[in-house]
Image (cartoon, rainbow, N blue to C red):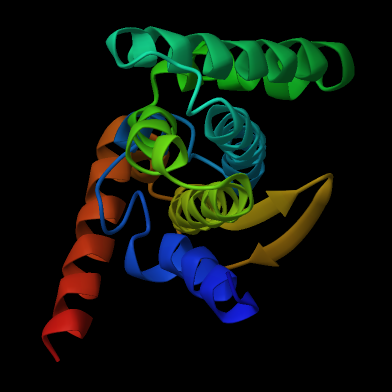
Length: 200
């Protein structure tokens, strides 16, 4: 495949088929861990790794996996990489591991990861499957960071990242924004904006 095809496949996951804002997949972690940019980036990085690595392995094994056990086989591959991420994060980033909680191991059943394994990686060569994983993972991460940034800014009055305040506004913090209803509110507004832009 040409470089143009790879670039198109990557951009598709980031913009046209963004898993959260266009396909409405992976909303559970988008609602749960998008209270700040830091948490969103941590979850996004984990998903990028798992999605890309599992796409590669599933694509390499696509001719060897019997059709009757393809889904269980995909889950075993995905669970292996989720375990690697979980143990690595526990060893090197314990505060982030604690903050992400149950949502980190739940990547195993995340419909984005399993969906890309079934729809794309099991039917395409390894190189383009890796690009698809990177594109979809990056799109997921950017969507989570956008949602997390909006919620953090309006919920606390500042955006805090790695010990530094990136942005501070002089507003009365709305606690609702860092609670679960705030996630629904922000995602609803973003989906409305995207639909409005598409219609135009």
